[in-house]
Length: 112
Length: 127
Image 1 (cartoon, rainbow over the protein chains, first blue to last red):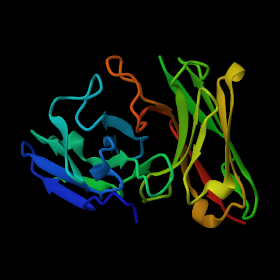
Image 2 (tube, chains in turn orange, red):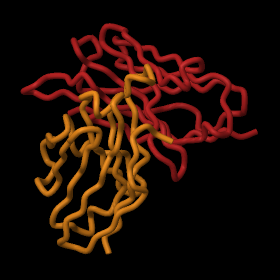
Image 3 (cartoon, each protein chain N blue to C red):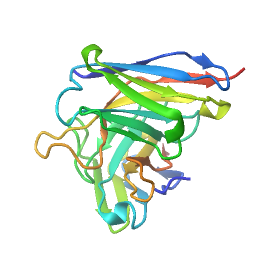
């Protein structure tokens, strides 16, 4: 189990808004460490979606947004599209692990 | 244009050592701030960060795998090599290499993120 907890799955109808949470603790997100998000379409490598909590790389639609508060972070997707069906991962750092990066357990998004 | 590509064996036997090479283009590991990391993903499971090497040869490892991992770089060849000893069937996974992200306005983040990824290489551990 990762120190960053994500719901295993979320779903929504086309056009709807969904959010994916990434819950941490005082040794990671709560300590002020940045959170990054990745999208992984079936059978492909992960793609950077959000960095530094809320920044979108060039080419990522503004339907995707990120936020952070306290010991949690969230990824919001508005105007849900069929092509958004994928796995989503949050990533940050945990000071108690003496490592350098940690991923959440991932969330599978289903577009109904 | 930044590209990365992993190469190495597709099948290794238990107890053997795995050696993977990441060959990249479009950036240099001699440039200040640059880093290349390795991440793996067992079939149907989540991503797991393994290791990261920086331009100044600073190396970071996943605490749970640190005793088994070694990451090195060859700047002249634009390559990063990851070795993992004592392979076990649970190490069966797709292994990715990825470059450390950089923001043109704010520079490098203290918590590295990965902006460019290789296609990944599936390594199966079986006798």
